[in-house]
Image (cartoon, rainbow, N blue to C red):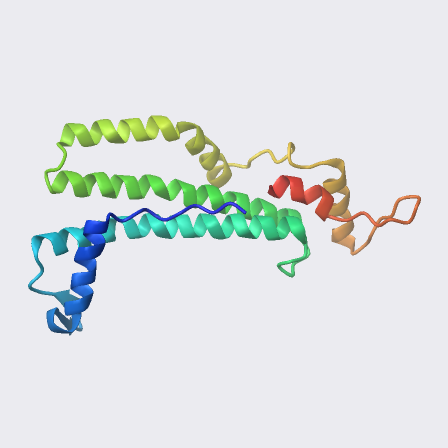
Length: 195
């Protein structure tokens, strides 16, 4: 199974985050309007906390992509695993959802580079250059994402004759069997698509 790891947090930042946790009852206060406020943080602790705020959205995206990959794997093993009657629709939804989540990396990258610029780790020109490089690298994926989300993608390359037959049979609650009596099943035809 595909599994993407979270962003690795450097040990120095983990140490600073651990220090915040150890002192949390003393440095944290709760208010209705501001939520939890931390006071008395060292520069290293503040940097670690800021880094965590920047990396957390990326880790969430990674978690979502991992869930989609696991769902695709489960769908390939058992077309009815989600209890619905439209396995190919489920497949298309999962593919579209993958590209939606993948596209969120763009937002996270923009936020991260803005964070770097505001702290004067990079200049405005360096940020623009980094973003241009990012977009150029991601351009092929962005095109696919835009078609999946904003247009009507051509699923023809995904629809084998068997998938077309199975989709039609499902509409009427029917099954088909070959001459030997073996019933046409989704899994041998859907699993390669999900993989």
